[in-house]
Image (cartoon, rainbow, N blue to C red; front, side):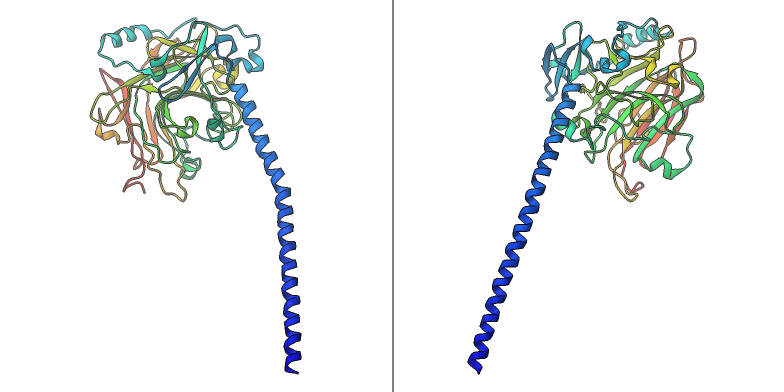
Amino acid sequence: MAAARGGCSFRRCLVAVVAAALLLACAAEGAAARNAGRSPQRRRRQLLRQRQVHNHLRRVNKAPLASVESPDGDIIDCVHISNQPAFDHPFLKNHTIQMRPAYHPEGLYDESKVASQQNTQTITQMWHKNGKCPENTIPIRRTKKEDVLRASSIRRYGKKRHRSTPNPMSVDPDMLNESGHQHAIAYVEGDKYYGAKATINVWQPRIEQVNEFSLSQLWILGGSFGQDLNSIEAGWQVSPDLYGDNNTRLFTYWTSDAYQATGCYNLLCSGFIQINNQIAMGASIFPLSNYGGSQYDINILVWKDPKEGNWWLQFGNDYVLGYWPSFLFSYLADSASMIEWGGEVVNSEPDGSHTSTQMGSGHFPEEGFGKSSYFKNIQVVDSSNNLRAPSGVGSFTEQSNCYDVQNGNNGDWGTYFYYGGPGKNPNCP
């Protein structure tokens, strides 16, 4: 009986083992089938994204007549002036390029003459070391596949986040910090403005996370800080997410709907019309300021041509770069209602902790010249097309323990301010 019970137990075990093996085989076959079903889907998604990236690159990278390889790895394409991205805009199909502004602001060249007599340091762009673009072309930094792939989506490539403009009128700290953008700025409001100018100290702030940036710029603003904000912006920035490195670069930006659907950085969409063949938007600038050492500045001027109504951009004393046609905007088609100058960073740290991404030089305003970054000779263009010192300048920062701003005025620098900071520190956890 014992042997029979044992034999019966063996058979039961054998059946159980065979059944388990069959179940495992079925499970493996099912998983393989599911994976086989998913694999083509995944491949289709990958192919679709590759095709979208390829098509986007074809749209944004225009056929060059010549190219210059910059020492920093950029490719600068020399594109015929009539083939630039601006003319992809449906309202610019038959546009006649305005090769020079009808009017500059009054007082600009008196001031430039004084500046040229001083011992000013000249800033240039890195790609100039290896070549230049011929007449009737404009230099455009070539967009690479990896540039687009770093963006959260192809649609958002080359665009700022919503709510990235500092609103000094807001008193809600949760609203101030919800976008992750932080600022240290000087501003004027309450009048009609037709342009702004500044001399901006140039640094290379350290960026903690690749999806963060640090910039120093001026803002020409119209409308409310809701869904209809108009903004024209220009200055320098460090943005590894946009450019793939930590170089300090000249940049512009525009939007007519608070950064939602319209506008972009530099020439990454249609809008800004460039006329200059020497300066490339988004290209690296050098030399840069050193802590306790040599200081370097750039001059930025944006103004509205009183005859044609377009908003023009000038870099330095010599380079009129181009213009934003007035039809791109609603409020700015007439005038600006606020001007801002200063720094902006993105803080991507969660749960109230702070990034160590630097603003300006990464040092607080009280350290002063050679150590803290500054804007000097800030000016506005009034309704008579005169450059003048702004009146009633205010200052604003969300968290002064992280980034701060201090205004001043003297005979040499006119209206000025120091700004910036290190971000995370014992008083800014």
